[in-house]
Every structure is written in structure tokens, then in C-alpha cells.
Image (tube, rainbow, N blue to C red; front, top):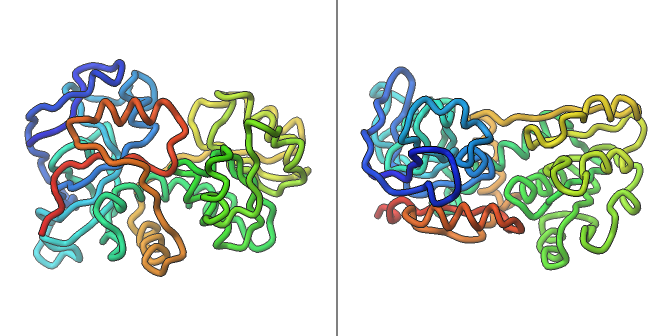
Length: 320
């Protein structure tokens, strides 16, 4: 099959098209013909030698966590999913081959039917980012009606879902973003948008119950400064791995609860998100779609920052 691969870790130009063996389906796995694949920060980190690159078993390696496509084969004839079904989900990359390829094999618990209201490109932008946002906002922070919630980088891939989920469950949402994204973020449900280029968020967003930190301390000590925005006993959930190694100690010293969060494939939760999307309660924004062979350009755009929503790779044309 045709795939976008790396032969070693390094810059974006390491990504190139190659022919690789088709995945072998085992156990409960479903083989999916990938139509579109999401591009996520973890892909770029892993490609560069960070992220989860230490788990790459061999080269050439196929990256890509989430996908939308059509079922090719299933474990048994009465399986809930059948060949031809339109599905989306995420796999365990890089232990198994990723979604930057024409075929992917994933556990039945890692995918579900894609929203009827979305295109393949839009659906491919959902699983990893939306599951991360749900896990941080709903499962971990348990955000609820009336809470004051500050979300950093609200216009990004995870952020634009986090803002919507927090607002859906009744929170008073404040988010950081650029001036060009202010109207976009308000449309998603943010009550207040702080232009991080003009204001110090910790000076204007105070006494927050929860901070969803999608930046950490890699930029302008965002994580540490977030502690000034939280009330005593509040909670900070930091998503980027390794972005703030001293989080637990700093938060505890201030009487603030803290935790990281790592996403996992979860078909049941993705099915709930699917219903919210089809009901019109949640929407997805795709900033740009690249053909698979331009994966390096997609990674460069992602790494340049300031992407609104998600970037997607087109693997094959939409099926009839």
C-alpha cells in the first residue's frame, strides 16, 4: 500500500511517500481503507525524535493517529461494523502502523461510525483532538454548570473542542487566543476571549475553578502563570507531555490540585461525541487539507503555530 513514512527521525522533509506492506489484521481488529487522516502535534513531535519516537519498532515508520475511512474487513461476520461502513477513530501509533497510509488495522474499541453530517476530511479531524478535550474537560475536570473555566489555546485542534464541551456542560468559559480568532472563539461558546498578545491572562482571569492548559511552560511560562488564575483548591489539567515537569510541586505549594492527561482510543466516548456533532451541538473546523504527498508541508504549517482547528491529509478521494 501507499503510505507517508519516515526512515529516521528528523525534520519535516524526512516524510516521503513509499510502498509498504498492507497491515495484517488480528484478533478484534478492523481494517479500514483510510480516506483522510488528521495531523496532530504528537505526529510532529514523534517525527522530530521527541513525542513517542522511542516506541517506533522499526523503519520505515508510518505516523498518524486519527483517521476517517471505509471498513475493509472485520473479525467475524456478525460484527457490529461491516465492510463498506463509514467509520472514524484512532490507533495506537507508533506501536502499530498509523493513518498516513491507505490502510490501517485498529481494535474494534478504537473506532465507530463517523458522523453523518461530516465529510471524511472533517471526520478525520475529530478523534484524537476531541477525545483529548473530552478526557481533560469532562472525565478529568468534571466541568459542570456555573464553573469558571480558563482554556488556553482555545482556537487550536484540542482547544476548539474543549471550549465547546465546557460551554455545553454549562461552564463560564474564558479562553486565550489571538485577536483574529476572537469571533471564532465566541461562536464556539467562550464568554470571554483574552488576547494573549495584549493582556496577561493571569491579571484578568482570576478565581477560576479549572484551567485546561494546552500549552504548558514551553511558551512564556503559561503553566506556572496559570496558578495565579486559579482559586484555592482549584484544578489545573495540563495536556502536553513534558511541557511542565515541576507542575505537581508548584501547584501543591499553592494549594492547587493538578494532573496531566493522556488520551486513549475510546469508541464509546467517540460515539457520544458523534451524537453531539450530528445534533449540531459541536462542530469541527478544518484549517487546511493537504494531499498525502504534501505531508511535509502539513507538518511545517502545524509547527509554525497559530493553526485554527485542525490540518488534514487527504489519502484517497471520497468513495462514491
